[in-house]
Length: 428
Image 1 (cartoon, rainbow, N blue to C red):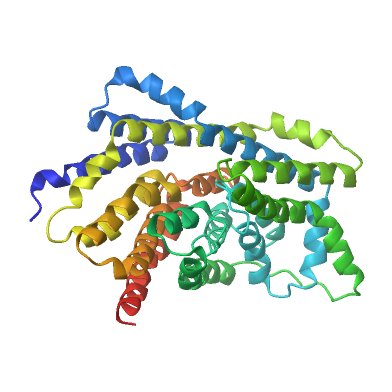
Image 2 (image 1 turned 135 degrees about the horizontal axis):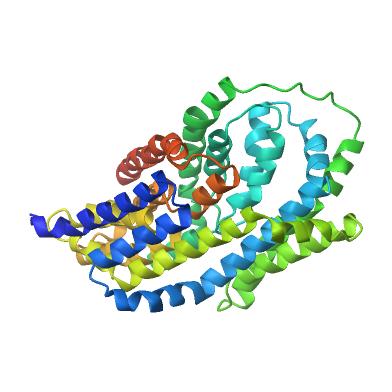
């Protein structure tokens, strides 16, 4: 039986998130609200205030933080180049001929960018969603929800995602086998997004006239206009694979950065080396706003690490229900408080897999690994500090609370259907 004191960590976490969400509601800014929540959580878990500055410095100077800031900067430069030179509009015009369904046009780019396994990728697809939805009279909350949700359709089953790779390594399961069984997660995720997000939005959207089909020249136009995107996505995939095989100790982000810089160069060449859009990017308030939010997220992450919040949650994994707690509650909670896949996989899967070994249930490693991924993924999707969620809201100037309400129910249903899939695999 659990004692009441075992649930103190949950009460502390709830209080800290309550402070953060209150700050957002009072409109003190996303970044300051996140810092308020992180400071509160650090205080509740006993991290001395005198240690906070060092935690902040460590969070800011962390390699992951610096790489992400550089990646997002490259993405925003590329996005502004595509937008200001008119190249994104040319790409949309060419592709819309072949995408007659308006729903497909709206979700195509978030899903496409989802092939690019990088944190904060929603900031890449956001300008494309904004462009393709022009004239549909959609609210910022509509576009933010679509961009955020469909950006993650492939995250649990695309073999290049670091979270899936880490789960494969920790569990000892072949990546191909784990990705195959997780395809069900992508199917479930897409259907939930279609039913709860896309369909209601399109029901009240203004449907634009569909362009008439033209000759094969359109495909050539699409390829030329889309070359920077092809370079970014294809280059990142190839380079990540190359680095993983030949330089396994090197950060995977290096491949993404090289691919993005190559895409920017490609766009420069295609548009006669126009520097004005790049300068406009660095002058934009939104550019620095998004970088600031990302910075505060990693300060938050460092604070909860130094305050040993995850270790506090480990108290829940004891008693007769330890395995379910370790396979569901811990991944969900860590995903929720961090908004990062690697956080819940790296910190909770060793506990869950260790319990499986202790109980002599290693034959169910696949089933519990999948269950843990469903639970953790539910946590990061419903997390108010998920980077993609925050940058989507920031880009579209969407109301944070209203957007979150749109994705909360389908996010929680991920775990519900994941539990059904787990049960099927247990008896199969």
